[in-house]
Every structure is written in structure tokens, then in C-alpha cells.
Amino acid sequence: QVQLVESGGGLVQAGGSLRLSCTSSTSIFSFDAMGWYRQAPGKQRHLVALIPSRGVTNYGDSVKGRFTISRDNAKDTVYLQMNNLNPEDTAVYYCNAQRWGSYYWGQGTQVTVSS
Image (cartoon, rainbow, N blue to C red; front, top):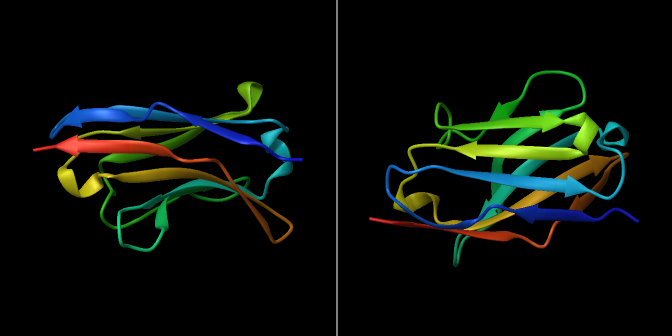
């Protein structure tokens, strides 16, 4: 059973930075891709960043140039470095892993950006 555990969320002022971590209970080599999604109150969940096992990373338009996704295979962990945060980035951030058409989700971590 795949378990994804996120950490690193919190409250930050506009212009600040946070780094989210997602650690998998299984080797991240087994996944076709890993990523981060976010969901703001009253809105749908949508992609923030995706890092496939092969190929280039993808970013949502609103975070390009500010957020960076990376992975540490030895630690089975994926990171999301978030810089120059603004109040529109406030949301619950979910870690996601994809394998053979199945999606796995973490429990989510709250990020709140104050103006």
C-alpha cells in the first residue's frame, strides 16, 4: 500500500518562501510521475507541478518561475520549493503519485500566505 506523507506547510507572509516535502512509503522509482496539486476553498484541485520518472517537469502557469519541484530518490522524497509566495497561493497542497494509471494522494498540507 502506498502512503504519501507531506510536511512543510504553514503560514508565511507575501513574498516569503516555503519548502514542502512528500515522503513515500515505497520507492519513488516505481512511480511514473510524482507531483503536487493544490485546492483552494470552493475551488477544484489543480496541478501545481509534475516531475515524471522520464521527461521534463511541468508547472501550472500561475507558479512558473516561482516554484521548483525536485526529487531525492535515495530518500524517496519529492520537494516543492515555493518562492515569492502571494495570497493567491493559499490552499491545501496535496502530494500525488501515479503508477500504471492509478493515482495516490497524501493527506494534504495547508499553506496560508498573508498579505
